[in-house]
Image (cartoon, rainbow, N blue to C red):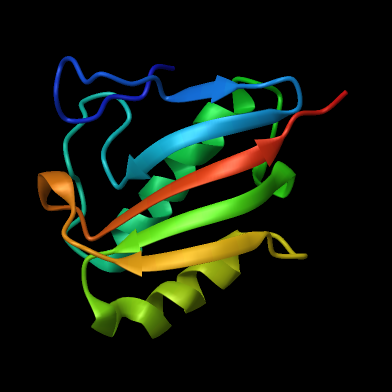
Length: 121
């Protein structure tokens, strides 16, 4: 399944890989078929964002357990604690290294996440 981004053409791939790592471009809470935002709350967008990442990882035979680094971008600083609860329910332990940044996001997203995963030999 090809992940859409809410626009027909954007100048980047959903993922790219090196010899040992898969780099997944920033994903948001958009429907993977239509590219439309289908949830207007943090929980719905976070769950869909991680589902989109799961789809991209699976295309390389990977799962969330293969993630070694996560970069998170939140629109609202007040969402930090709620985001952590949702994240902890979905991301398997041991947790990967993580960075979280507050910023304005495209397409009215509340959260965007990109990951780096270790390829399996």
